[in-house]
Length: 169
Ligand SMILES: Cc1cc2nc3c(=O)[nH]c(=O)nc-3n(C[C@H](O)[C@H](O)[C@H](O)COP(=O)(O)O)c2cc1C
Image (cartoon, rainbow, N blue to C red; front, side, top):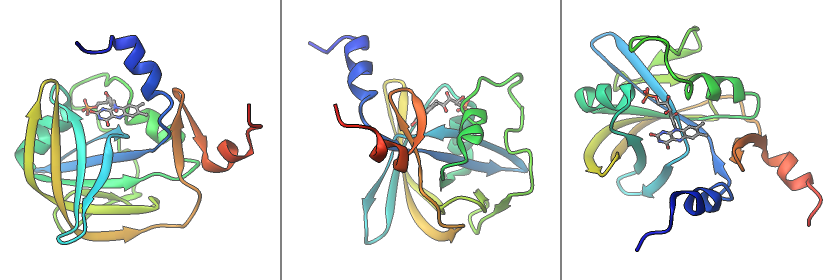
């Protein structure tokens, strides 16, 4: 028997996570979404894993392009994270909206202000229930300005510095 949705959500709210934007491009169209379900999978070859909702616009494009970038956000990028998580007004709405993105060697959009932007070619797409597990080999990395990371915790965005400065209960 599985735990109910609320119990599971209440538990996962307590898992502090780095915030990323997973992005792709195919035939001149770009798409990206805010994602915390991302982790390093292996070193040789360097593989990264991201879990993306099958019903989303970004998955649809990734399933065609077979490339993705994983852009690690810094504090100060909360608004950007909100934009890439917000419901789209139209299916084709462009969330990128500025010149701080450039195409990587795979063609995936890289955020030049990210702590690091990992440019990946997908090797495996594993659909499971509502989501797909995307596994990519990292072909290139672009490092941006070094700052504290953007952290998602208890349903909000924070910085690692403010987490550390919270009084312990
Ligand atoms: C903090 C945060 C983390 C998220 N993490 C994920 C994730 O790991 N995978 C996912 O599919 N959606 C995640 N979402 C939801 C997507 O960002 C959101 O549904 C987005 O609008 C989907 O865009 P799309 O239609 O381009 O796929 C997250 C949202 C927030 C606010």
